[in-house]
Image (cartoon, rainbow, N blue to C red):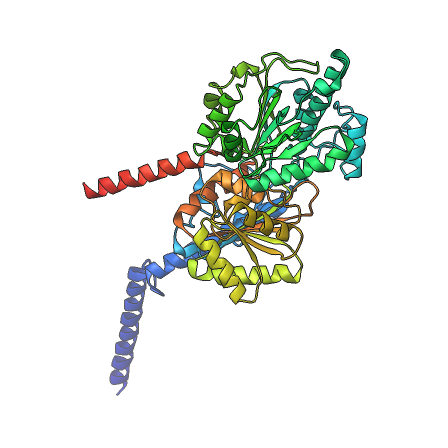
Length: 545
């Protein structure tokens, strides 16, 4: 019995040793192998999400440490941009609009915030009288509420009073009309005084159908606007402005200053109703449009009909030894020198421009929304109704007449009364519509780009690009309908719908982050459209081959 018990104890002890040995061997053999808790693919996704969150947190902390003001505010905050922050334009992945060509970024948005005052308003203590404008005219400006010159006026007025040929370019809404109108009026007064003092009889100065100054603009609306400014100054200066319409009586009319579109002017020149014997100044307003392929042949014919001989030397007397040529615009084609070379010696042309030329307006809020076609209408209605509640005049831009008619009907169907303006309407209709909008008869206007150039829209507080513009120059002019000198603060909202819109957004965003001029500002729209058509045809032919 005792032997049996001892045998069982030995057997039990051996078993325990064996089991412990097996456990030890098993542990030693497999302790280096990982325990599988979830698939490797999911583990990688989890790690990627953690790294992304840490990176975003790091970027946000870095942004909080920066002292510069916020320039670009984004829905995805990691793309926010602060003034003074470094940006590599070749690293497109840092653009918030980088992935906007795909539908994955629908409903994304970013806003370029105001970070400075209107650059057109000069801080220099300079008066119009110091620039060479007579006291009576200065008093008239004060009566009109204009007390100090803008930047472009300070640069342009002295040069134009010296008789220089000039290209004047400045940002939209900067006061370019007065920059050329005031020197022109001064020259008219000088000429009358010259005849009175040198000939002894002012009556020898003949201004019947014989203008001293011709101002050409691309549209009837703009001629009306320039005429309105000239008439407001007439009580303070001895000159007769005249607006040339499509039809005019063949009687003798006093006209020191003739304001016209190219088409109307050519008709009167061909019928010899207008004389060029007294012509001293030729001003081409919105010259980027008039030097477009659509107008350049008409401008060249007008210059030939007037027998324009360009002034080659500056003169301070009452008469010039030729005709002073002045080009005025907010944008200018890169190849304008080539065109001007056929008209005048380039070394005889003064180039006058401001620092804000071809730059994003730093005092205007500009929002870009990635949105699909189906959502555009509903979003537009929401924004416009909100603006109506706040009594904010709104200008909506579209790219063609068809969309203009569609939006007019759609907004009215949604209880929003609005006006429409497009190229299919007669000039008389367009002028009437614009006056109603400007006078506050209705606070919503749907328009094509015919309303984007030159028109003084100081009442507009919100511009909406329902259709994103095709060219940078169009964007500059559209944005220029708000934030003008004498207006309240404005904002711009742009709907980005198509893939081809995104490339233009990239250029705008890069310019905002680099704080530099917009690139590729080519105002020759007809030529650019022709290039696009050629490119499309080339692609079509390649696809066929």
